[in-house]
Image 1 (cartoon, rainbow, N blue to C red):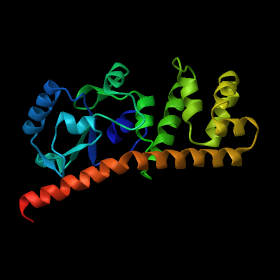
Image 2 (image 1 turned 135 degrees about the horizontal axis):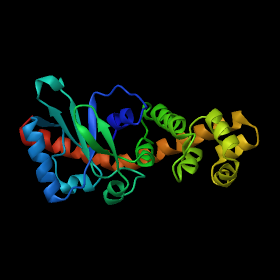
Image 3 (image 1 turned 180 degrees about the horizontal axis):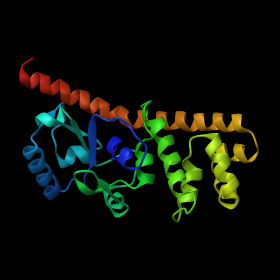
Length: 231
């Protein structure tokens, strides 16, 4: 998941880290600890890697000590806001080819897009590029359900207009629940742009609300860690 997955889907992003979604059952975490030790990678920040921490929605962070990785950061998550639980993600996973590593499991594109709807400025252009790249790649022969996904998630009035022109039946259906698309069908692209901006604002606010208690808990852990160290 994360920036490396975006690269594999054709929405190029320069990323200095790698994010992994894991099922935090004991055997998985044992295997993960072995892999991190073999890299080798060292933990950074808090909290420590544990099933309880991951299930609460926190990320656990590591830094590779392998010289060729130049301090690559590794982030481990199990729960993401607005995204289905891990078993569903795993069931929908896509296997893509990674140069030098072979085939690896990657979040399905709709799940990756949902995971990118955060309060971070850099994520929203990436959502737009992911949709645009996928619509360009599969536009001539969309996989089942893909047209509805594009119409539901596209981030530009122009792409929505083009998609609606090619898929009027699906566009009419999706427009009932997406004001931005309804504005496009009415021929009002400025109104569509405003509706898209409101979608983004609302998602950013939900993300801030989701993270507020987790950030407070993280700050408490950091304070306790500083106290334990005597600093």
